[in-house]
Amino acid sequence: MDSLYGDLFWYLDYNEDGALDISELQEGLEDIGVIQSLEEAKKIFTTGDVNKDGKLDFEEFMKYLKDHEKKMKLAFKSLDKNNDGKIEASEIVQSLQTLGLTISEQQAELILQSIDADGTMTVDWNEWRDYFLFNPVTDIEEIIRFWKHSTGIDIGDSLTIPDEFTEDEKKSGQWWRQLLAGGIAGAVSRTSTAPLDRLKIMMQVHGSKSDKMNIFGGFRQMVKEGGIRSLWRGNGTNVIKIAPETAVKFWAYEQYKKLLTEEGQKIGTFERFISGSMAGATAQTFIYPMEVMKTRLAVGKTGQYSGIYDCAKKILKHEGLGAFYKGYIPNLLGIIPYAGIDLAVYELLKSYWLDNFAKDSVNPGVMVLLGCGALSSTCGQLASYPLALVRTRMQAQAMLEGSPQLNMVGLFRRIISKEGIPGLYRGITPNFMKVLPAVGISYVVYENMKQTLGVTQK
Image (cartoon, rainbow, N blue to C red):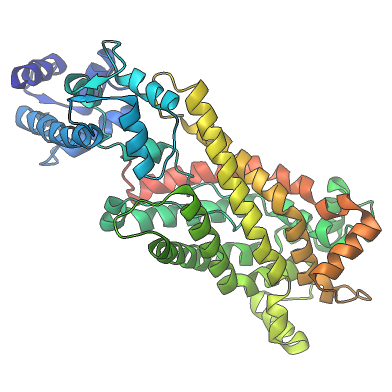
């Protein structure tokens, strides 16, 4: 094998100076069809360039391949359950199940097909090594990592289930960098789509007064009342709450996972749903007063509040401490349908893609992942929207003159009797309008922030 690696080195070394630079590595490996992008070449180069001199010499190149081969050997052995020197579809199914991902035998065969060189529908060590030789993937968990719900996708709601982080990411500190990148992406995305968010809140709160409030009319009304800047009212609170909410949710998720799974056991989809929902509820309980203030600021008239602190002071003085938790029950109840449907739709879309489109690779690519994430989140929002609307009305009803202070059930009855079922979906159009720009903006910012913060891609 050493002579094969040696021959490969001299083949790649175009200028024959005894060292490979990044362009030689990329062009050579692309020529022989091993990699498809500069990113992949960079990962190999960064790992292999031990002395950081910007070149891969013969020793570094050989060491990289031998070290990588050892990791691949371990991954191969962990999959080869019956130790017959071959990986079969059933063994892939079994291995992924222990990692909390359920796939069918047919999907496992598609994964095998992409690696299987001789068409036997099994993969031996040589095929495995040749396939993964220059692939930075070192274990089967990477298949799952392709399909992780991305932390970087922020559509402005707070009910999504947190991300999974591997032990390596936790030890190396990559997890907090990813969370920080996600937080910054969320802040930029929410600020960019804040006018649509404020319009949604205005339509939820004032929609029943007049059926005339449409998107154009709503924007015109807001600009007329407070100028262009008023379109961003309440956005400061919406951005500030990202940090405490992410921190509490991540911490709580880890604690609930420990309670629900035994030591060393991988988390399954159901446990993930329960842990994620409970973590969401814990985080919401912690930051809920900020949700109330965000609504009050968004609905407030020009000059009513000078800022977040003034808003908090006035609520406390006139309504007492309990006002900071108005609408808390429907908000809590909304977490279950949102998180459940979001996760179920995502799993369904993932299965469909693996069944029908996974021909050469299990990696679906950015557009498919973003599409699946946006669609599953939208379905989750659709299911929990009536509860979100009632929550917003309860948060704001003290501001509406002559409006009775109703509880959750009372508000549901009042909306249905006066406006019918469509009344429970007021403001859903601007809500859906912001999904695509929010996903796109947050993804671009997230990817750029990951590079800035030095998040390594495996």
